[in-house]
Each structure stands twice: as structure tokens, then as C-alpha cells.
Image (cartoon, rainbow, N blue to C red; front, top):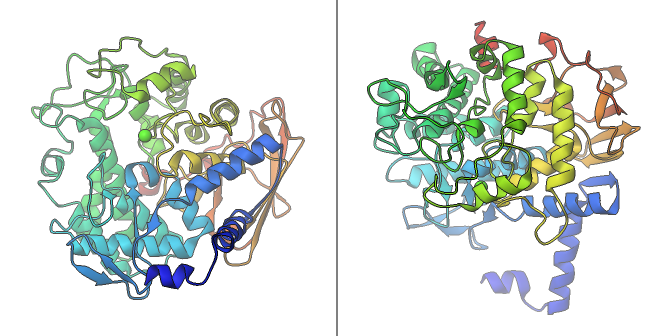
Length: 490
Ligand code: CA
């Protein structure tokens, strides 16, 4: 039936031509003025962002659900391949910006998954009527809140209920201990610290949606409290996140460069920045902006350990970090990919502009080995697509995109609603990577972030680029992007 519907009566050449036309019409959502290499890299990345998630149903809407019964998708297209530990960061937000109808159907698919789950869990890694439980966190909560914040037309009460139920499955990956102690204990769970940081952000996403739906504090205050659980792991001595044991003591011995231990696929230097929803809170923990910026700078200076025994063997992510030559900035794996943008919260946005261009220029090539690690279902590509445009969604669930450094002289985004976002960068070039000033819709713009709703209404963004940083632009507290601490007035 599928073959008949999609291919009946058509030759191979006709089908190939139809596929070519489909791909071109997708890629044409971005019109770029750049070098041939830049275009090849950009469109290759764009292509990667549109392979997965993938449609998972027959032409009549029937599909095998997580409960292994046959369901029918009514009023939506069912999707699978949700590699959420990777893709909540930028892949899903990119789809929500450029393909909101499909992104909305993905959210509906996630809610169905939760309703079909014997555990009542939203997808962790949805894999064709299964969950393969790969990696950690319940990052569907991030995707749901982000989509709803940006206008996805879904059943919001069902979404919130799915999120709340998920966060209370006490036997899943340390959740019971996390609820009891405020962290997943290191002596009980092998990925305790990274999982705690991820749950804290995921719980912020639940709070955010509950608040948006007008739920009483008595129902949602617990999630606001959990959103601050990252503080339970902060070690004032090293100014880094550190595993904590069930009795409250910190993990000891502790080597912040060592991969593994309390962190999955990374070390403390990579994960300390995983406070997407509250960079200001992290700045405060590190003693203010000066201390925070010094720690940020150190990420690029602290050389990676070359002791290959510390993860029980060399995983490819370790080898990739060693050969990238950016200290402990391990862009080949996902946990650190938002970190550069945090300079926008700490009064030194020009450092984000410098480093984001270093990564685009030195770690992305349109060659068979052109990615610096696993591409991972669109995430590492979505990082590039956003970064090349000049902004990135550090905290999905807010409506903000945080500024970096635009790669092209000009880009036009043709949005699904018919509006256009026109981005121009005067005097742009490899050395001229700093934003000296910018205008939005003709008016001088000092903030370090753009707002989703403004983009959707159509927008003209004009960057004036320079080879020397403007150290007075975007440095006021009022220019900094969202932090939960600021929302709470703490
Ligand atoms: Ca990865």
C-alpha cells in the first residue's frame, strides 16, 4: 500500500527527480551569500538536520506504538528517532523555527509515546516502537516546553501531565534518590552528576510550562525547587560540579579532568556549564562575572589528559577532544556545545564571537570526515546552522536565541508562515568576526539575544563586523539573556 501510494507508475528517474525537487525546496528556506566551501558546509549540515526524526507510520496513518499495538495517527504525522540527549539542545529548536508544523507533530508523537508507555515515561530515545534508553535525562520536557512557548498547537494539559508523570517515575535512573536528596548520589549511580544537572534543567522546563498554564504554586513549586538542584553539586573549592555521595560528602578522590566517574561521556570541565536555565546562578556560585569568565577562559587552556586508562579505555569522544586542540572544549560531543555562548551572560560577549568562529572555521569541513565527532541525529549540524546565522538557543523553553557571530555576508530565512528574516553582516570576514554594533528593523540593538516571536513576524538584522572587539556592546546586566535566578529575583 505504501509502495503503491508513493511510487506506483513512476520510473526510478522520476522518483529521483522528485526527491531532488523536494530537497531543493527544503534547502531553499535559506538563501546565502558566502564562499562555496561555506555553502557546502551549511547545506550539508542543513541536510543532516532533516534526516531524523523520521516519519514512522504507513500512508493510512497506522503505526506500531510503544505498547506494540497498532495505532492510528489521527490529525498528526507520527515520528520516531528522538535522540533527545543530543537533539533537545538545537535540533528540535531549529525545527521549531523553520518547520514548526513538523516540529509540532513530533511533540504530539512524544505525548502519544508517553501515553503508550507502561512506565508513563516520555521518550528518552524513541526508536521505532521501542525506547532504547540511550544516555540520560528526560529531555522531552525541554522539547515540549520549547515548542509550546513558541506557539505549537498541542494539548497543553496533556503535555504538562506527561511531563509531571515522567519526572516522578521513581525507579527510573536515580529519580527516587534525586527527589529525596536533591541530587542523584554518586555512590549509587554511575552518571550521577551529569544526570542531576540534566534533571534540574528538565524540571525547570516543567515549571516553566506549569507557570505558563497558570498552575498554582502549590502544584509547581516543587519543580522550581528542583530547578536549583544544580547548586547541590557545586564544589566551592574547585569551582566545578562534583559528584556527591548519598551521605552528602563530595566524591573523593576527584579529578575534574577525568572522563567518566560521575559524568557520562565527559568530565567536570565539560558539564559544569550545564545550567542552561540559570547561567546567572552559576555566575553567582563562581563569585561573580570575573571569576566566571576566568573559569570559562580556562576551558580552552586546560590541556586534555592523555592518560587513556581513565574511562576504562579510550572512547572516541576522548580521542576527538585530544586532537581538536582546544583544551577541554570538547565540541565533538554534545554536553559543552552551548558553553561558548555563556559569555553573553557574563559581560564578555566578544569572547563568544571569537570562539564560535574558531569552532565554525576549524572544526567543520565539507569533507567525508568533516565533523569533529558523532554528528548525532542533527544536533552537531544544528549547532552549525544556528551559529552560522549568528544566534543559538542556549535554553530551549525560553523564547530567546543568544548571539554569536554571523558567518555569512547575507542570509535570508524564508519562514513557513511566509515571513522573511533578512540577516546582513557588513564588513564580515574571517578576521572581522566581532560585532561592533547591530541594528534590528533599523534600530540600534544592544541586547545579546533575539526573541522568537520577533523573528516570526519577519525581521531585518544588520550586523556591523570588525576585527577588534567592541568591549562596551552587550555588557550591561540588562543586555544579558534569561536566567531563572533573575526571574525569581534572587
Ligand atoms: Ca555524542
